[in-house]
Length: 167
Image (cartoon, rainbow, N blue to C red; front, top):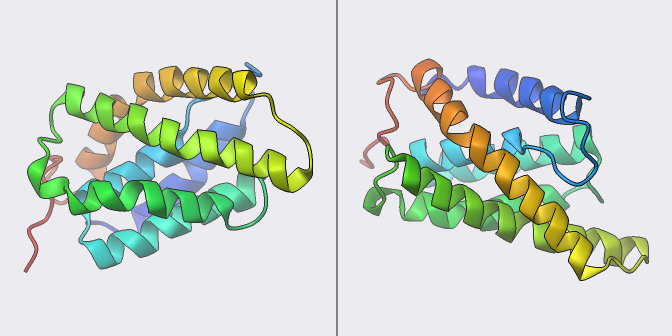
């Protein structure tokens, strides 16, 4: 993998994700999650853990989505099982990518919003959490296959979404 491109993409995706390109208050695409998913699919476990955690930390720093470290921890907890199961998944299929994205967004956003609301001392209505999560799922699922394809063409040395074999 061309690791030097990952921080560049992380910064670009964070800027896109926080820009006014998607002005909706109830939904936004999660480009950083798609980048972390790509790393979970392509990298060996030790490298994947470090990079996924750092992508979550970028989300904490640049997007201000709660206390520092919450997104980093949730990114690692949600995407490391994908990394462990990558040999058994057919990740070049769009349906597989969509299922992984939907599950990852739900497992990431629901605890994140509930935890941030709890830490802030504000009660977040669960209906609002589900509405925002559903919107994020739709937006992220629309963009994820294209982002994964683009990342495979530019970051992966093989140009495909085939994971590197463990040695």
